[in-house]
Image (cartoon, rainbow, N blue to C red; front, side, top):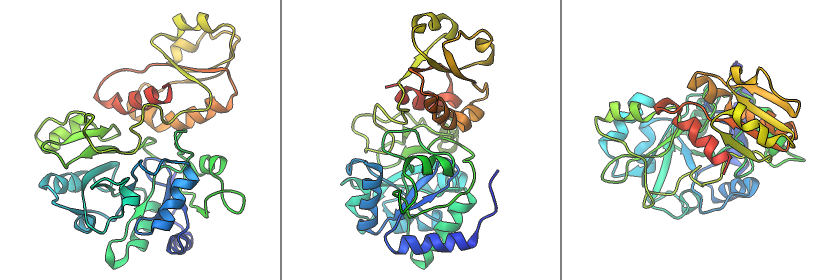
Length: 327
């Protein structure tokens, strides 16, 4: 449940951003670690807090379609089509950056990722901060680089923490994230559109909107968030299996935390110390995934064993996150 937007908290968050500070901002995907995208000092703090490589570009969160030509140039018509269909929402577009966009955002590339989130707290903060000049907020996931993304305020407190003892100046508690995994990223700077990260906006939805194939990107595509082989990972090692029941005997000497369909968990052995029944619906699975990974990791098992879910367009984002978590 999303609590009503606290306007005083939003004003406090704007003050923090104005002073080069960091705010944990709820979005519909995951909580973001927000800083002023035009402020190199603030953006450097994001990288330092997350221990994130500075070559790994950040996404700029903007108010909507009206801010596109402030942040990007040579914008194809497809960007406006997608903005009208999917913004506000969990879609990031990679476009050619405007001259004023700093290398500290783009990882030195000539492209920038832009997104307009739909979470009411994020919308309120971005609108209040943007003003008349379409200022944007850089906000990668509010967690230590490579670890499980946060989908509630407590996840941020447990990982990065709030000042004076932690790394974040202010954490906005906007409830649990609806979507639960990061946005789909589509590259619109090449000859053809391509998916660089899977999310809730599926390939089918993009192809239907654009009227053309939208394949996955390749080695020559721009670098984007969440594209490393190992990412979204618990501290505990994750093992993916095709059949939980058949796989469990090989792990009988280890303490296990497990996630699989409910029917596979009816006779779990004594060495399974924590388990979750996996959702059958891809949207529900996606919504719960990171919260479940956080809890499985907290069980202090020797291994986390997860039965691979179904294949298919609507499962691509889940499959992607699980594969990277297990890498």
